[in-house]
Length: 98
Image (cartoon, rainbow, N blue to C red; front, side, top):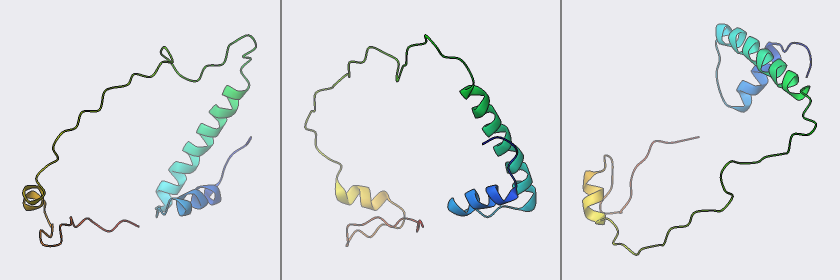
């Protein structure tokens, strides 16, 4: 990953993320991508000999809570307060996400 990255790399990543970038954004993100990858390359060069691997902080013992049965929210009350809800169908209407 040495070297610089060009607008084609940024355009490919943007297409995968379904983003439309302006030429100015493409230039900015190209510089940022290059800087990030250079930093990652520099971090990989650090000598970690003798440094024990770690995956997380803390004691390593998960904290569990007891499950308490509780009543749920009143369906009609919730649907009445929700914008775009269909109380007859018992559904919320949400924006389309693609």
